[in-house]
Amino acid sequence: MKYFFLLFVSLTFLNCNNLKYDLIIKDATVFNTKTGKLEPGRNILIKDGIITDVVGAEVLPSSKQIIDAKGRVLTPGFLDIHTHLTDILGEREQLNNSQDSINLYRKQVANTFLPYGITTIRVVGQSENWLTMTLNWQKHPLPWVPDIYTCGAALVSKENRKTYMDHTVISDSVEAIKKIQQYYDFGIRDIKLYWRLRNPEFWVALKKSQELKMNVCAHIDYQIVTIDSALILGLREFEHAMPIGIEAIQSHEEVMQLEDNLTKYKYGESSGRYYAYEMELFNYLGYNNKFVLKTIKKLKESNASLTPTIHLFAQPVV
Figure 1 (cartoon, helix red, strand yellow):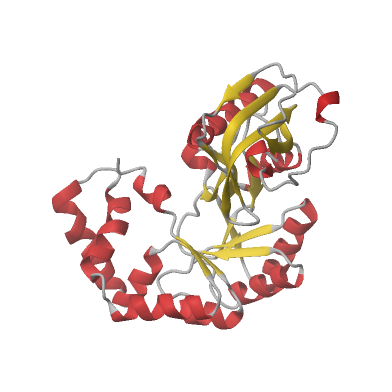
Figure 2 (tube, rainbow, N blue to C red):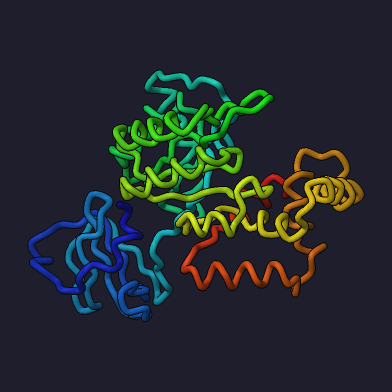
């Protein structure tokens, strides 16, 4: 893990004077993730990209480099738990597996996230052709690249349309169970279920993932599986705020008409128009929409989480 994430380590100083550090950040205000309190006047001792200890200002061993934080807050690293590598590396059916190309891909990921303090990302849906690469990244993290957790492909049921490159078609319940087990055997512990995965495939995929104690998130949308149904089935991690708004409208035809009416006059035919609609939808519903408020209350009572994915949708519009 990156050193941002190790700020919760024990504050006990052990044999500091016998070590030479690569970097010390002195006089930092540290956010202690265990106590929830800010602790001023701390020195952070770092060797080989890993925090060795967090000590008081009176302890300052030798180091190759010292950065004076001057009392500023040093926070833990941030997590982006809903990312798609296609947004970063481009929509490629195949990746170039030469080492130079793999290094370039990893550098692109680092340049996308690290400048903003994001040190861990979760990839929720990608082409299965990329699994070997991303699983290798997951198992062999580097100090200069965000840690990565991969969910495999977004799973979808058979449809009369061309499947997106990062989706995997599941033909029936038996295949759904086999696919979840296959991902587990690969070393994947996070599963993303997509809204195009219909019942009964959705139910058995969720149940199998739960049996294996995998972390399951799902994009529930267009009432293929409703939010209420997903909660009853035991789903507790929902992706995107937009599906709540769509369920509030309830009519698929009305949703499509609103998408057209709400965004065309503002964004024309721009490539970001669809993403802009995600924000405009809630302006249309208003702050006190009864269905939205009821759904938020239900999620809270069920101890369910919602990842709003604001950056994912806002970035293409900017």
